[in-house]
Length: 396
Image (tube, rainbow, N blue to C red; front, side):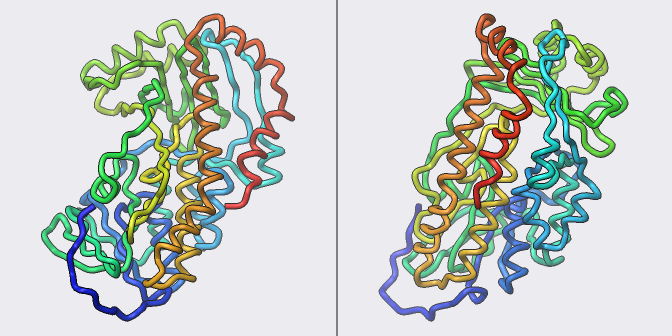
């Protein structure tokens, strides 16, 4: 973190909505935070590095704990218009033989809908709650300097500005985190995967279908008018994944899978439409330094195996917005401490859960995966509902 050497002087204290706030990253966490702050009378500055929002993205599953934040923003019905509610998902072995069909109806009845949605659709829903001139596109942060009282920011377009606090919502590879905290290593799970969209008529139901192999996973997730596929394997290193040979690697890794998998593999034709990623998460001792604080994946990235990363990011944005309404520019670090104390335990629990699920679903020993499949047959809907209880009943 860079610092500015200035003589001691006293600045006027700004309270609540008077504070000058910069939010870096206009993804789901950044848009959620901006919308919640504007609703409370703040006028934050939001910068996003891409020139414009597009149609590229993956499927997102929103837990009730995340989607209910949109109720307070008045855009929950818009989410229901673009999201697909599901109550069942099926787990099969790699040959396509059903292991267990699980219902989440009791969970939905208790907490609210589980919704899968296309990421660009969720972005558009959130943008409805943000002022039309609130986002500076094609802009990011090149330099951050702090004093005890202010943050001086240099943007990628060469302009400069001064803020009372800066919020990094710029994802797992956060530049804000790097500028302020230095090199914070991610933790690689030993898993990597490819995701892509296929024709929705391949699976005509609204059920989620998963195929669990030995060290391999193939998941089919429906959204409205779309069908998303996640494929994952165990891999020791994080070397480059050549685009032109992605289809060959996917087909080779899953050639022995049954069920709907062969039809999906046969239909792959454009490697440029296949997204690849290594599964990393992040646990930091502290999410803030000076007047800069991190939210979402920038602070607490979660493995995709639990499906809760987006909901956790939205929850964290909501908690920070709540605390900032009672804050002032002088004691901002105390506000950050309270924000972190409210979130650390819950986020850590979901991170641990996602790591455990990764080891379970991606068991890379044939005997262990066979035992896993056998035990899953006895893992009842009651136990499954209890599993969701542990993740949804806690306050934000």
